[in-house]
Image (cartoon, rainbow, N blue to C red; front, side):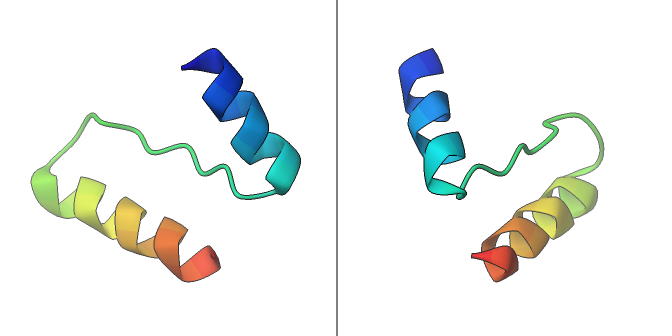
Length: 37
């Protein structure tokens, strides 16, 4: 996965999502990341 992460970082599209926490918190992080794209 590292080459894929590097590609997205180079494209300015990489968003790190923490997978720990409540489902609502993780979903909110995903929504916020998608809105930035």
